[in-house]
Length: 430
Image (cartoon, rainbow, N blue to C red):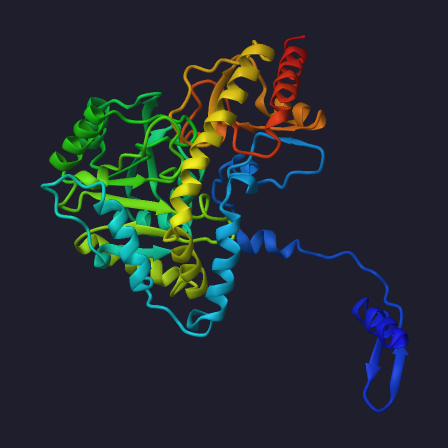
């Protein structure tokens, strides 16, 4: 057995080969030659413009590093005790060996519809399962929506700053972005109306509840005004409700719950709140828009893993799911306040205008003279990972910002993180 294991290891390393009926032989040594990929430069041509720095939020965290850059909650904030048995049950069910419907399983679509219906106004016609399309995460959903509702060469109004993944999806789709300035309270409806009139755009991408990265949460009056603008312009509002499950001192209030004529396309992901391994999202749209979005989504993925759909539905329909969300709210508030307090005490160069009512991040401003690339490198060398804010702007940044996550591991290290950040900023100032 020892010899057989050794031979398998040597074969895997490419040092020997086994010839059936003949024996095992040492492979002849090969002379290493450099790869020549130069021909690809001409074949590929000029690359499209890319978003620089956004994927920094997806970097793997090295050991003994304080991570304030991450875009996903730490595993301590996930319902792990629900996810593991749910995946086991799903793997043992028929979902493991059958192809689900292209739009998603009926049960999961009904759940997404019921979640939005529960928030709908009494006079609003509630969405049904037929209005739902299940997607492999919200990122692919954004691409499908942009292609279906805007199209290559079309114009999309978008909050600024906003989610870098939406900017990337729009660029890859060939969509022209028109930024709409968004304050800590949300966008200006008059500016939005002027942009619709001047550009002829027919869609506006926004995050009314706990926006990424600013944490902005629209007031009921602002929501009403934006919906009125969208209706008058006969346009679409693409509502990214990414933080639906991450309310802290307020609850998510989707504008889609106030719409019944198909102006709002609502996108809600379960990936961050259930598990990053369960990439499942739901989209609700009505009328021909839903059919076009579904066609685009099917062209990308054909269908979504039935096992993941079954597991996601299992988790969110357990009684313990609501218990988990209540505990998550308390934990996020504790972490948010701890990071904000650490910044106030140990990082005087950092400006935090307001605490977000939900979400996973603090959006802070640093001196305008700051070189963000140098700052992130310096902090990284000191054991702190941060994300520079430039990637969240669809056009030129209006200042120097950082997005700092309070949902990462080891919240006890937040005071040390603030001290490292302040030291790096002080060093830049000389």
